[in-house]
Image 1 (spheres, rainbow, N blue to C red):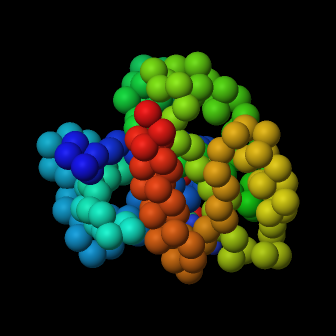
Image 2: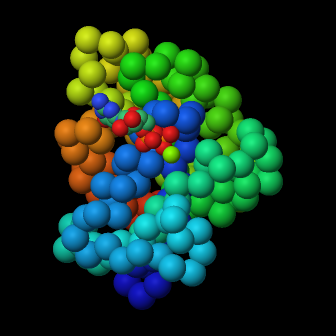
Length: 177
Ligand code: GDP
Ligand code: MG
């Protein structure tokens, strides 16, 4: 359908060190990606790709860490995103405890009623230093009414699924209107 292919702005959220930039680099390195030159050249990646036989353009923004907590940069991130990847590290419980306040803030700031949000438990390869179980991640996602996936940016595990998943969530909202 016309107008349904983006570009959609996808925002990476989450504590420093959880793996946002690593996920962004994987997204940017995928086939079909073009570096987005106009704004935030270092920190955004534009990619046109096919999901379920339909082409879509996503721009992934890795700018969350650049702003002060609650500052204008983070506010504008929450206001302008079409979809959100809420990342924590399964090896860092503190990053997990920051998820609920960030999502509540997001829901308050976003002009969208029900923005697509995926809760991403990254670093799933680090089994021995895991501090947050898959089940805990899943139940938080249920409680916060968002999708859940565990990824490993180090092994590129579930990363393609993550980016396809966000496209599907965006489309679901579109078709519901
Ligand atoms: P950011 O601060 O959220 O952007 O996090 P970075 O992408 O800079 O990652 C922080 C550190 O964690 C870096 O040393 C990465 O190499 C490492 N890292 C990121 N993702 C993973 C992962 O899935 N597995 C492992 N083992 N290390 C990761
Ligand atoms: Mg970073």
